[in-house]
Length: 266
Image (cartoon, rainbow, N blue to C red; front, top):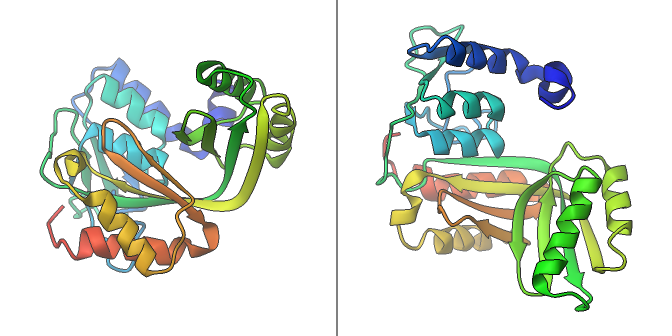
């Protein structure tokens, strides 16, 4: 772990340590006792109608932990999933709760959107090429300099001469400023601070048509402007970038559309 386990991982170091021990001892399962019942369809401190999810697949868990669900550190999930160790998240103060099980061999292809997550304090960068470089060279140079300045990227959206991406909230504004200055010979850079990422996550999204349209419609009906859209080829995560001050309204609208209106048990 870069910077050591305490500095590099932070407050999730105990979860990661337990995960590494479970892998090393070839444990049948890892129980993680927290102050929460497990993974919910949305952050229960922000959404009154968030529901507990009883089973999630490894890929769903990985996406949720990275894009705002703070139950487990992403590195914990990575270590246990890689070695097929099931993770059972339980509540220390409610031992009777079923909790959430991350089952390495679990598949739920028909569920559509499983949960909604969010991250705030995000910076959005847009880089327009000066067209002196080919598309491959343009992208290569941008990311080489991002690595040089320690810029951690969350979401990416590209075209032939334009690149947009969000910068992880752990990156300082000083790093971002130095990075953008270093891009002067490549193209024009615009910086938008105080942004938020809203993500709809679920294994079954790839087999359900029209989900992107539903998400855009529900946000549009709330008058919320979408500044960037990102969806991976695996179609398990559909994310949009919006103004941070509209995060709560966006969460409520997207959760209502995909979770509450659907009414499907998780």
